[in-house]
Image 1 (tube, helix red, strand yellow):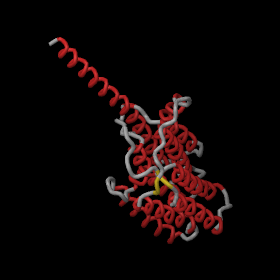
Image 2 (cartoon, helix red, strand yellow; image 1 turned 180 degrees about the vertical axis):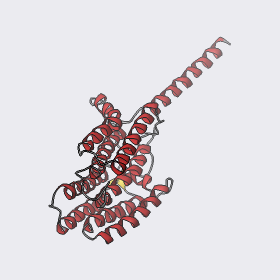
Image 3 (cartoon, one colour; image 1 turned 180 degrees about the horizontal axis):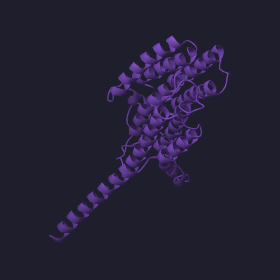
Image 4 (tube, one colour; image 1 turned 135 degrees about the horizontal axis):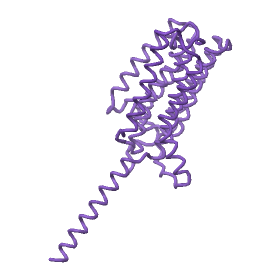
Length: 284
């Protein structure tokens, strides 16, 4: 009887340790996911800086964006679904902590306050764009950065087998290439830009809502590997840089816009032909 009791206790101890391990894993932020979250926070900070600047006294006639938003909104919205899909791949099903909700609350309060100030008030100084960007980085980038610094000497995560992207994610990647490239190339044709923008946004809404579909944008982020993420980073950087130059300089001409569109489309289209992370979920 005693040996049977000891076996039951040992089994119970193993079960408890297993539960503790699962909870610890759920509460952790995998290194790969932390890298993507840090990149997303930088992108969000750049978006905030541009958005806030265009509503400032020095932002010009197009209050809160205008054509500039046509350049930065598409990659910003697409990245939300892509990063969420990658989080599933990295085991990043994270419960929202009190700190996370506090960060979201502060961010939304900042955004609403600036919009009201810009519309109702007599305008605000341009340097609030830098303040909002810095605050965004602190709110959303501190945690992933701390994970990367803490685990800088840790062993690298086991790499998944590389396979060609499946049909759905490959099609979504090619459509993103076409959409982003067309937005850049038609920048000096306002009617064409907004037609492309609206059609592309409807497409993004469809692939964002198809969370469990093999052709959804979350599945695309789930399959993307380094080549695709690097191509997306190149495309987003070109589009954000084009927006900055459009606001601050006279360097952007129709020819520059077309060249930028070609670079953006080519980078993403080429990445669609590169291997991804495979179609089968990695073992726990």
